[in-house]
Image 1 (cartoon, rainbow, N blue to C red):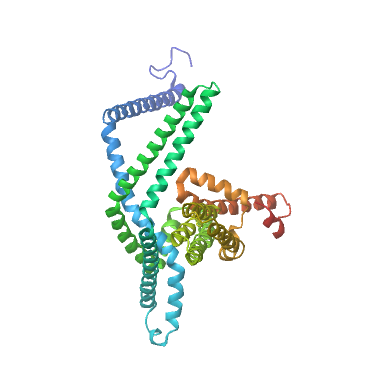
Image 2 (image 1 turned 180 degrees about the vertical axis):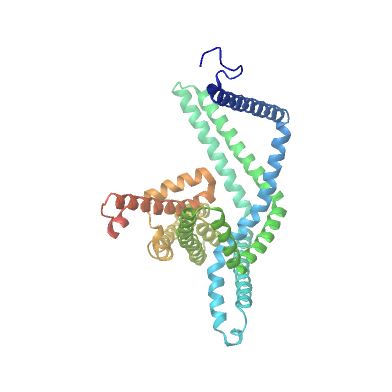
Length: 422
């Protein structure tokens, strides 16, 4: 067909689909660019509005997290109380289930009765310990000669001043610039004053927080009762939630993690608490028998220190030496130090290893590293939880190492090698 015989409008009909596809692609491209431009402008506008109202937003977020913390404090405290008392409740419930008069009752009834018995016994033990400590402290304070104590403080202050004067005279004779010593003494006195001021403000803050402390304690006890009475129902509910929201592999791994954590923390925390009570009782009774002033208080402080590895012996020796020097009785001081050494040796080699689970048998070097890290992060509570956390990390690290060795067809470590490792 010649060019003259072509119908008008039929030219380039073969290129029309390609041209339409190109126009469609161009439209999609421009639409995407427009979307990104609008989205970027919207983000910039939101950020600009947020920057204007940033103080109000920060205040609202802080208030929100404050109220979340107000709720979580008694909730977590109640969970900890329930976790610590759970073995005792379970033991009482097993005994009550065997009583002929209570066999016909439901498990819920016997569990409630076991919770009530455990709570009453715990309250009685706490009240007895507090009464013994308070009565012992009151007795020792009434027996203190305040005039002699005042004279002792004055003599110590006078001796320190004389030592400072003699040191200054000696430095002057040696042609040493005494301004350095004076500046050091001034900075030291300012530091001590700052420490005293911080302690005073901390005490004032603690006294002002007493009402909130008792309020949180009451709610924590209520939460603990609910956890102990309905732990099976709560466990089933959150297990269903976890299974519904997470993949199967994560669900199984999380259950393994919970079992390991329960094994480690139950073996450590409960064992350390029982050990602290035993050490406090033995130390307080022994020191009171030896007529050491504030013997029961020293025993309680030693028991609290024993919650953290290596801290209890230091507390015991420092307190005994301080009280012995104040009394001025060298013979009693030596006997007290020997008593502390014997009791701490018995605890470190017999009592504590029997109470703690073998699953937290970790190397002392790792314990010290965990204590340093825990102290830097969370203070005393961090030190208390650092050792079981380190043991849990060690368990999962060993499990990962064994898994890699299986993949590489290498033999696993023997039980003897595992005990000798960190």
